[in-house]
Length: 240
Image 1 (cartoon, rainbow, N blue to C red):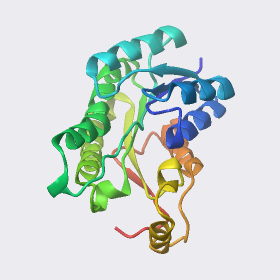
Image 2 (image 1 turned 60 degrees about the vertical axis):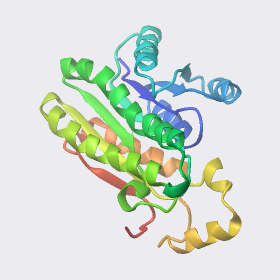
Image 3 (image 1 turned 180 degrees about the horizontal axis):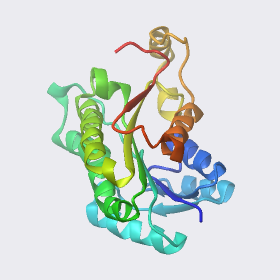
């Protein structure tokens, strides 16, 4: 029986690449999304991957969404990839409370919501794979991203704690910290700033979404059962 993999923010950017890679590897994939209905429908038509809409920052919405995924796909979640995230960049002395709250609830609270709702069934099966997408900026910080950096750093601490709690139950919990990856978000960065960023990456280029997706495949593989509580840096050698 195919293992069920759930990817939050799974219909665009890095999340879309992760969903597609898991699907191609033979997993039964559910891709979560909140906004961008037209994009989600296009993704579903192209990939034939089931897509489900709910707000990952809201616990009750996650509870309903996961129940629907399990009902439609006919089982409980074996693999969870927490990828959903937003940015609201601003210098702290100008940051609005709502911009802080939006990023923390979407990027960090969502990881609690999703893990809390799948961890018991994983413990009962003595198997589970959880991969949380953090960021290089959760390790080193970034100007104008105190909210984002705090959330992504929080994900790393959460990952390490849950890994310790879950290790004896056959569940691995790891984080991936991507560097600068070519997505629609990075394409919007002005060319001169992008060039300065590129110069600071030892391999001399931005990463691609498939490189992050391949890292997820490695961590969720059954043969990776001795790897837990780690942070895998996918950043082209970018110095921290």
